[in-house]
Amino acid sequence: MPSPSPIITSLLDTDLYKFTMWQAMLHRNPQTQAEYTFVCRNRPEYPLTELLGHLNQELDALCALRFTPGELAYIGSLRFMKSDFIDFLRIFQLQRSFIHAWADGDTLHIEARGPQVHVMPFEIYVLAIVNELYFRRFDETRALDQGRQRLAVKIERLKELGRETSRTHPFELFDFGVRRRYAREWHREVVSAFAQQTPQWFKGTSDVLLAKELNLVPIGTMAHEYLQSYQAQGVRLRDFQIAALEDWVQEYRGDLGIALTDTVGMDAFLADFDLYFAKLFDGLRHDSGDPIAWGEKAIAHYEKLRIKPETKRLVFSDGLNLDRALALYEHFGDRIQLGFGIGTSLTNDVGLTPINIVMKLTHANGQPVAKISDSPGKTMCDDETYLAYLRQVFSIPEPAMSK
Figure (cartoon, rainbow, N blue to C red):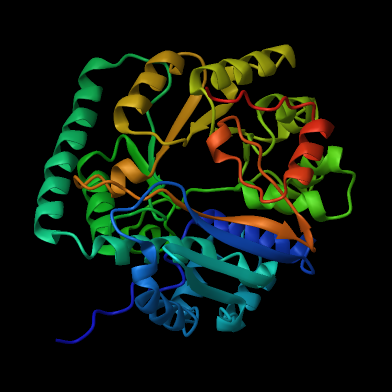
């Protein structure tokens, strides 16, 4: 029996924000050296180390890929992408020597280390590969049957929304499900179904390849790694968010205006998000902590700055399912523009327990970097001394110890 084709067959099969951050880093901090570390936050049904052989084969195939002329033309057609970045992508190839995977007992380790503009793309590809390899061991027929039943329920729920809502601002749904999808082809089936059957609500996908092939809007701006990297760029640590946001403004000149708020928590972010940034950015993205409390803080901040909230947008993307997204819409839909990026519960809702895997930036320029999110379980840093220092600088209390 022939082996299946590689899981990643196009370098466009990743999140848009990888390209937007990539361009900004290439232009602003091309010399940065970085280290990304893989972690599984929950207990899988079997040790991920059993995937190691196939994982290494997939990494070999991934590192043989290049951008095709058609792919380059598509990226270049996005108005915020610059010609010199496209020229860089024209000669770009992931380097196998920059990524290593190994087993330590039952723990799978994956580490990408090298120039950040060469190793930052690995994250999404690696997560999609590990997910698909992991779920290949389960009953595919049963999973797809369950998945299609659940997909039909979601689509019908969205259709009902058109008959029952009267909120001022529309409900807008985006696919954010590349990294933890059940499988590549299932991802395509889900996105196609939403795009065809609920186009008034489904407004795009973070997956650049699917956006290109299905004629959808590619969605995304920045992730934590972009802001975290500024903790190691030589600016005063207290000012790293300001430096990162300012460089973003200068790079994109009004495009891609949704800022991520929880690299060191919402309160610390709002302390830096002054009238200048609040006017220049279109809105904010939520990725940890209580979403209602976060949204209320965001609206209050805009009102304090005498900015009408209805002129701005809040994008929610933290572990959403459709019911939670609709509840948030009911709460905020009359007060501010909204967007909902749903990942795992769109692309991996097939009756199996998803694995909670991440691959995060942990070091830049030889020093630790960290995210102190509004959800303590999402904090990721292997240097407790640096983490304590970061908390001190931003006056962030230690999380309460669970009893």
